[in-house]
Image 1: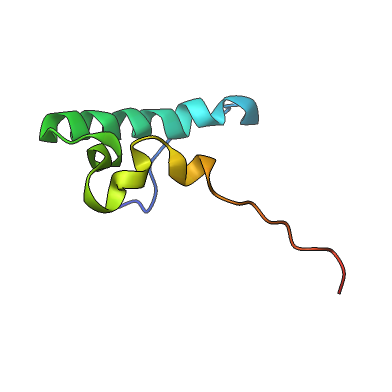
Image 2: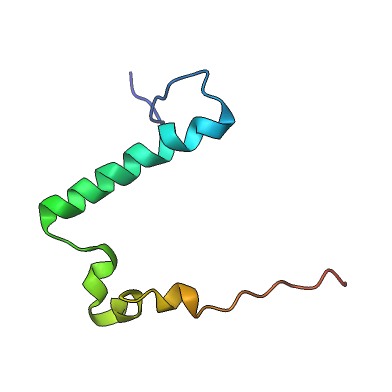
Length: 69
């Protein structure tokens, strides 16, 4: 039988769901990067140069559209 989703423990309160769902996948991703010798943000090289010091996030502008129609 095939499945279209990853099974997860039932009965987990909404507060703890990120620990059950997201954290294991993030840890797996980090381990795969380590095994391949990669660095987060491609090490801040080439097209990822702005990720080296976090300026993409720090310098980004957040705009909120007005509620007027």
